[in-house]
Image (tube, rainbow over all chains, first blue to last red; front, side, top):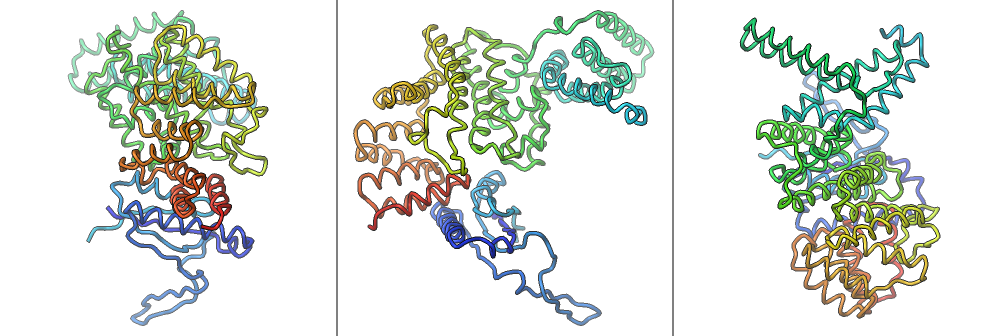
Length: 115
Length: 429
């Protein structure tokens, strides 16, 4: 079963953090990605550009309307994701707890709809 | 009723405190007793929660009763009887059955009138043995004990065990249904099977403790005070089965670990490994109590896993007096533990002792044997130990890689920072 770990972070706190903290976080994400890879569970994952760069699109009266900014203004912003291949939700929650985001943000875990 | 409660906030608060105290002290006792006859834990819990609700409504008006346990038990029993009766009436609709149920109820009422709290037998141990029965799935045993003995709700248990709340409550419901349907008995096992069955009870208690202990800063509300709950359960089992040395061994082990809890973090919140801890920060009273328990257990002449693990902690604790650690003693204790458990965790700890007694090369060879075990791939302590040993034997490239694995697998931010600092401190390869 594949699970998506959706990473929500307070972007403002990232901007305020000092260089050493950012480096340590960066190192932690690298280590986490590698650990998932070597454990044979990593399917994919990416970090996203800040939510300020987002645009939303929807059709309104048959015409597409484009808006600046993310879909929802939230205290923590969607900043990246991992997709992991794991036997069950318990294992997915274990990997979510290890994800560095769990320390300074929120990790949402969802099973991927099998196609 | 709610209007009255608002009008008397102090009586309300007192009643609430009394009900909470009764819940904390007596929940498991009352569930065990209520479920003992029918084997139906879920129904016993439902009846008891109605009794607690009645207490919150009644006690502010009348004041808490002199014997809260007996009061709650009487109300809960009445609920159970009412429910049984209405079920029987529904299914059979016989007048004579209804009358019979009425008679039973009256007899029960009479029997309950002059019961004091001291008369209520303690069936908690029997309930724990039912929860940790071999027919129960191993992973549900500790959660089930937490719920039935201590009255934790499913969401709190789920967070502590890192399982989704919906899954946990489903598992708990299924487990209770199984106890009722399969008629898993509420009794202490006979002597021949006691050791094995007791081990399952102790393991469930220890896993509860370990969850809380892993939360070193104590700031994780998710884990609540699971270490304290584990010790509380350990005290209970040790008090109820004082002639089983392993119950004392487990309690000694938990107290030793708890004694070092405050020393595991610096004031800045950084992780402090055991070797770097200041023994003056260990809780001397807890250590003394653990040592006394271990001595009593040892005198019974039946060693076991928990006594051996407590003995390892005892050797570490001796550093507060001798100023050094007897690693050879620890190595021998882990040899014995390996014979008893064959657990990879024991093998890993044994390797750490080997590093002290015979050097990092021998310890690394022991780790290589362990690497065959597939579980090590995602086991953080294995990689942290490996990183340290590689660094000490001068293999910097391997040390960097092993630290990287350990950092990626760690979930405690303080330990992660510690490992990152260790990695950064390595000399260039």
